[in-house]
Length: 583
Picture (tube, rainbow, N blue to C red):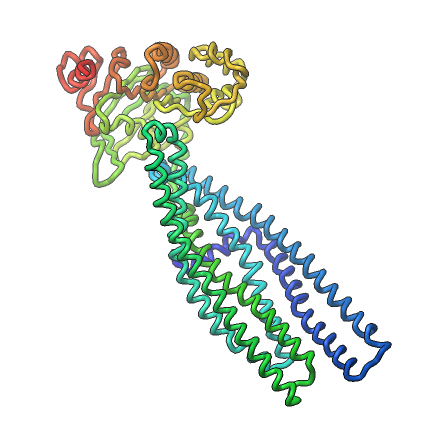
């Protein structure tokens, strides 16, 4: 995306709130009117005072001043009220309709991105884009109206008023303006790269913090607190350095404007005094008015200069946000299952690789009949989990076809396909909520009776009832009020309640003690009845009764058969099976 297009797109993103922005612009116009009228009225009042002291009139001074003072008071009160109204309008509209809308769009976008994006992108970086970067964009939309628009209108209005009041002195103020604005924009543009680096390192910092707290127990166990702290300091120092460069570069603009205005202010005082003495200026009030306008002139110039710096800040943030919004979404079919799945699965000459330069699975053929219990075994990196990823279409195959009950899964929508599967993974996952809500995650809207029945079949009803609040006990994946085995039983109950015809088990008993493993195995036996099951096994003792064992190595099925048949072959399965018992 070209740099110039980023600003235009940022403005297009604000189209849904254009009516509110127009209202804010009108308020800005009224503020400018109040601001530019005040010096003119004040100059007239000074002329009244000058005439009074030149020709004293005891009875008429207060009468002449009172009307002007009331108007001046009204202007300043009106300015304060309008400023507050504009601030409330912009804050609420931008926060509610712009930043909130962008965050929702990013969230929806991520739902339609390939799983590989979430796998390869740190969570902290995604959160940084959705929070910090979007907030920065929202602030700039605020600045467009509040700073740039007001600033330019204010400049134009002050310039007109000065020229009408005393054109020679006005030209002295205006002469330095083009050069100041040009120099400000050039200097501010240099800060964009530093702001981009700042946001990137901010995302890295958030990712590190999120990782540190997620693995807090591991950090403590291995005494890695100092290492974690040092890594945090390194990333934080890079972010600080980038931010310091960005802020310094963008902050240079304001002193340039201040210097320019100070030179004009000095020139007005000197030349104005000379013009007054020489009689070329009609009154003291005219000089005072120009001085007040010159003082006002610096404010919108500084606003505009600040806006140039904020623009670079916003462009750097917008690049990161638009990068997500512009990512190519995964295509999806719209087909549906003509009937409930029976559970027949066939892989036909399937090729797949995570990296196109490093093939993983080539020419894979599997034929699984409904109700079969299929175990997938092999060394680390053999492609066991990849089979599951392809079944669920977390990743799309490069070549070949996968059939469910004779229907090409590529013709089904991902949602339709995944509704046919239940999963119990090695790493349990519970969200913060009640036990009943966690179990019902597999079947939203399930009744309490259905939840209890599923937990009973999963052998977790007993321990649930011993908890203080029973099924209403609050739990979470990061909480310690449940053991690992109890959490795993709840995930089995969740799959039991979902009642899908196909089941994926990723060594669900590997992280528990032997006694709990027996209970889990009973629960899984109940779960696996009359279902087509794919079991990823690391401990081969758990799959000796499987109907079919697929032995994988380097992405290929090197052996398949029952436990007895494979042992009798004295091949690769026999080798890894006996090696486990030797260990």
